Image (cartoon, rainbow, N blue to C red; front, side, top):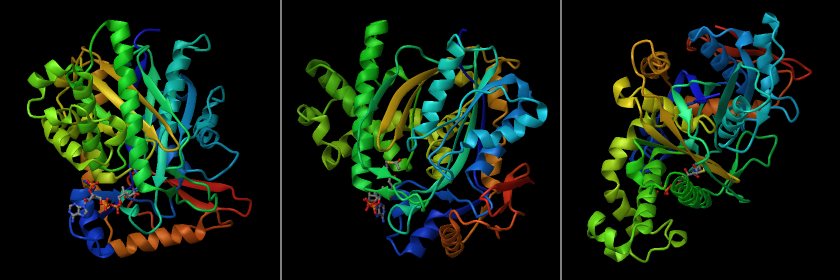
Length: 451
Ligand code: ACO
């Protein structure tokens, strides 16, 4: 099959949020720490009415409905998540509730987990399946979903929640570039969830930033080598029309683009540096490994990459700044943001670079080529048109005071893994079509309804 890639996208996020300016005041931190220092505006969160299953049920059902896809058209379905509520039963099997009434049970795939990377791993699996001898002509559906919550303290404002579903198949408008992606996997204890009774991770914030940036350096260097080998082309930031990143918080993404600019600078010959990067000679001997927290390097390359950031990365940060870190869907929320930020004719033919990072750690840098066909009846036009509700839905959310947000997290903490359990959260604020938890019975079986 040719042009294997993404044919349709669906994004959901919580209908309630806390404002980061209000949270700064409530937490007693200096004004601007979350909004300017981290670059976050609003943070979506879930009440006790939502869990990983309900998010995934909602996003799958909405994608199939919006795109009029038959249940029997799906031949593979898998979920990437780090929001674990069962050590054995996959979320994928829960999603089969949607398919069974239509007599559809012949669907491969289960769940994939490694922090924020699970969605990307699932996506790579789906693409491989379509390209393989096992393919049966049907679509693959990839779901990335998480509820990102942190214990009280400095990491809490970097939470979020959401889900993305991606329909994968041939002749797609967003085509995965073959044979060039780069991966970096290592053992690190930067962010992990060893306490199976809690939703909260154990985090070493500074180490997680260092791991993220070093994975980015390594993936970018390897991606550049792969392209040079395959196409005899030198990659630098000019190669891409858009560069998207997993977004723990938006400021780190801006620093990441600056980091790629530093890589470009170091990969350029000393002669060409003088022409392309005037005034940066004093950084000629910077080493990647020793500069993760070097303020002078950071400042110089933030300035140097500012125009690139505005043009190639900032448009992809809408959902990340308005919802927060969704974990596995974060990068794909970036893709949705990009797609709704431009005219279709501006998107046509674009080369998009994507960096996926999951603590622990696993990371990949890969690229997508947008199809050139952008007429009214084109798959690209259809894909983008079906995302037009995202911006209005972001506006329609309900703001909740920080006190209530915190009380909600305490409620989740107290009742995590409790059975039997009757959720107490209201359901009136949900967007139409949302699945929600009605009860957990004494055998920990979860029951859902749809609004
Ligand atoms: N106005 C403007 N900027 C401010 C202000 C202010 N009033 N106050 C602080 N800042 C800046 C700081 O200078 C800092 O900027 P810098 O990053 O350029 O140095 C930034 O705001 C954050 O302040 P810090 O003091 O560094 O924040 P803190 O250490 O309290 O927490 C952290 C930040 C570590 C990111 C924390 O939120 C965390 O642990 N988050 C979870 C882990 C994470 O997201 N890691 C990223 C990759 S891994 C993953 O995806 C989970």
